[in-house]
Length: 225
Image: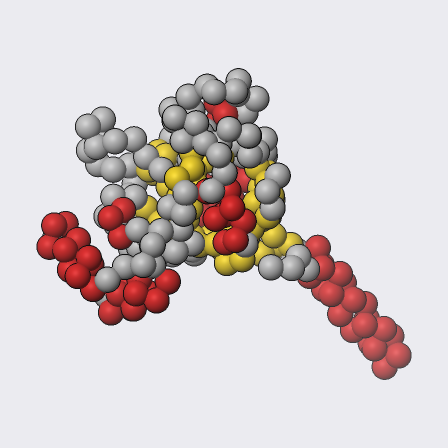
């Protein structure tokens, strides 16, 4: 049996071990996207489990490293994740590349300011609205009124919750995308960087004239937001 002194030493060892482990751990649902313009942090929703796990799997294998934000619309969206964007020649049209798998749609969240959503192919070739397994976009958007939300509800046949309405009126977004694309996360810091990327010079295909490559890493617990 341990005497009192040995017992205390053992407890101290355990506390130090777990303190050290905590310093090396990661926030399982947050990633940092680093670009030539700056960095921002994304929180992935636990409720959209398949999307979260899929995105984290790609991040861990380094899939996104050196890919470009290949499509931007000023103060509306930025989009990336096309594997063909890596080392793409200047002016090349991008956006058609993808991984082999797709994900079933999940429409529980809406496209408010800072939302992270999966891109997808158009309805004519993708009537079930299945999401890309890799390409994603980030919403900036604009102010939204009650009347606009009423119109979208009527056109698409669903009802916003009171919380969703309040959020749209408070921070804005792109409700026209609701029930069309699947939201699976949000930007929790660095939206100024997202907006700066969206305002970059772009060509006729909405690709930034100057490449904006990304590197995505898991957010460590000691990383600052």
